[in-house]
Length: 127
Image 1 (cartoon, rainbow, N blue to C red):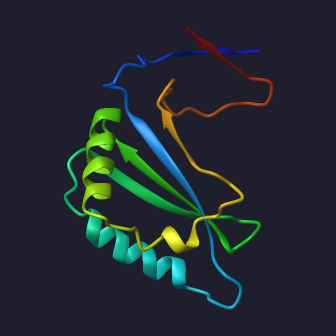
Image 2: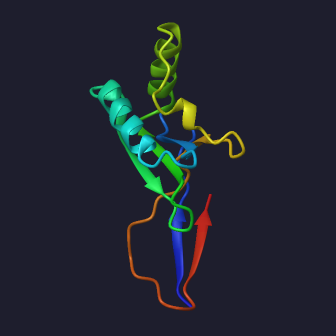
């Protein structure tokens, strides 16, 4: 069995973070999340510290989506969030947030380069 070592990351304010927002498309309103995502992307264009985002759709339930935002640091995200709230802006995606599945803010704890795993390979995380 091959052991793969993954190094843990620094968890300081400089740590990259991912923000996850779970979304649910209302019954009979197909396409509204894609449209809202397009409007949200326009508002976020050029935001300092925002490296990018992805809108993922569930393969088992086409009405469930997850927005994954990649920020260069917690500090950058906090600055954007503060300014966003002070201006009173609401995301076009907000009406579709899945309140049963709260999202969250996750720092990048470990990174591993891509590789092909064979059956029986194990992954270990080193502190």
